Every structure is written in structure tokens, then in C-alpha cells.
Amino acid sequence: MFSWFKKKEPELDRTLNYKSVMVDMHSHVLPGIDDGAQNVQQSVTLVKAMMGLGIKKIIATPHIMADFYKNTPETINRALDILKAELKRLEIDIVVEAAAEHYFDETFQELVDKRGLMTMGDNYVLFEYSFIDPPPNAYTVIQKMIEWGDYKPILAHPERYSYMSLDAIADLRSWGCDAQLNTMSLTGYYGKDVKKKAENMIDMQLVDFISSDMHNPRHAAAFRDALSTPYIKKVLFDYPLKNILLK
Ligand SMILES: [Fe+2]
Image (cartoon, rainbow, N blue to C red):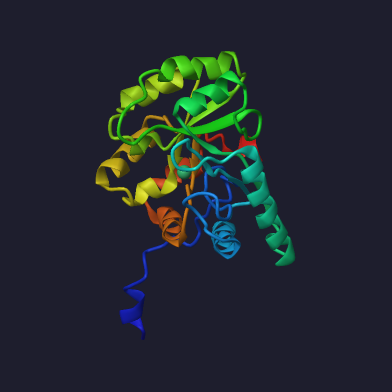
């Protein structure tokens, strides 16, 4: 009975969840300050989606990007306060903190010089590259982050930069920079090339953090669907993931 309906359901292994990962450290769930949640109701929807999949702590990372999202610690912390107040009002019990997803532009390099980056945990900094061109001075800036700023850099979703080879990701990690994989890359959400690269990164132990990069309900569904991919088990268990260091 109702088999016609069941066929529409994705084949989910209901025993899997993100409890072992514990901390989601890359998302756009703060209300109204970037291309993620546009109001606090949308924020709550995304937070509940993560909680339902076993996430115990969320570190929200709004974009800081000179051209589009001129966020500062003030704008980000204000949005964090709005979300926390709403979660408290609704008696939703989860730890939410904020850092940023810094875009690797000139403003970013000025913030490195001023030691003004937004951090998570023990001085970790999440940053992203352009999707079009590789940054020409990445090595210099990353070394400055580590040596001058005492930062621990994390590059967001290297599997999504088409110009970045697996060798280039290995080089980046040899410089002391961690790599964060978007779990939804494993579903083919960003295309089959990104999916293949994500799988290769896992096999080659080039992944330090995994996270949702959740902006909207479509991402929430893909974050859930990633749990039914064959590769997810490889990172959920017996893999040297660092998410737990941020708990
Ligand atoms: Fe992001």
C-alpha cells in the first residue's frame, strides 16, 4: 500500500546523522545580512533543519566581501543577537556563535595586516577564494595569517574552485591551511565534477572540516540528502575531522 508514494522518497539511511561531527562551522543562517536567511523566521527554519540532523552547535559565518557584503563584527554580532533572542523566545536549545566567511580580496588582506579577522574556536579563520580566478598571492597572505596573525586558516569548499587541482589542495594544506568540504558537494548539488573532486579529497585525506554552507531550504535538503551518499560514512567515522575542536 502507498508504494507509489514511497518511490518518490530519497533512499535515506535513517541511522545516519551528523552527531559525530557535532559542530557545523560554515553557514549563512544569521538574518538579513548576506545571501542566506533574509529574516529571523527563515533563520529558525535552517537552525531547526540542522538540529534535526544531529548538529549540536552552529557557528554562523556571514560573508564579509568588500563588493557585496560589507559586514563587520558589529553587523554580524547584531544579527547573532537577534537570532539568539528568537531561539530563546521559542525555547529552542542550541548553541549558536558567529564568525565570518571572509572573501580573499584586498580588504581581507588589510584585515590580516590589522589582525582584525573574525575567528572561531582557537583562532580559526574561514575564508573563500574567487570562483573564477586563483588568487595570485595566496601563499604570502596565508603565511602572514599564520606567522603574523597567529591565525589558523581554513579554506572554504576547495572542491568548488574549478581551477584548483587536488595537488593544489595538498599544497595548500602543506602550507598549514586546513580545507573545509561542503557536505552537499557529495550529492552532486554543484555538479558531477565537484562531486568527484569531493570524493577524491576524502579518499586522499585532504579534508579537515565538513560543513553545510547552508543558505536556504534547498541547501537544508541537500545537507540531509548527503547522508544517503556512499562517501558520507567515510568522513563521519574514523576520519581525522577537526569539527569537534570547535565544540
Ligand atoms: Fe559560504
